[in-house]
Length: 172
Image 1 (cartoon, rainbow, N blue to C red):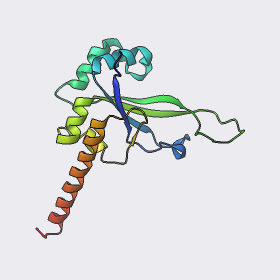
Image 2 (image 1 turned 120 degrees about the vertical axis):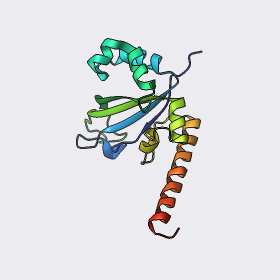
Image 3 (image 1 turned 180 degrees about the vertical axis):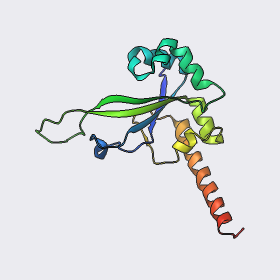
Image 4 (image 1 turned 45 degrees about the vertical axis):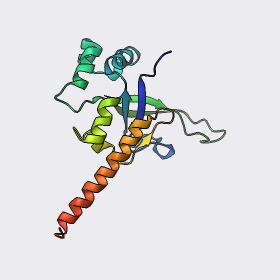
């Protein structure tokens, strides 16, 4: 049985959904959680080499996974400015010739373990901070542990915000 390598996908940019399907919409910002970075990058480099820099293509998946999982970063590898074809919204222009639109996206790759750690412990506050904005989970790719960690992250952010408000009011 083949195990799914991509565990969850969340969007933290604007422009997702029907209202975000035109050229003036903001960039879509995706975060993909994977079980193992190296096999993901190996497959993705084969399928989509144009998503990666020339350096990453030359040095390969071990380089990408090494950068992503090293101790000197936020454990997330981003591929910016990727053009993808987005189909028209369902039911758009019945009978009209609605064509797919090319949209620019960026996507980050992080292991599920590192994402959950940042969401629950704020180890880097990079993924956790990005996920404190409105997000949308991609249907069919949600991971229960990530969803629970995201809920905890939001509760912690609300608690921290309320504590900071108390401090600002001078009402100890």
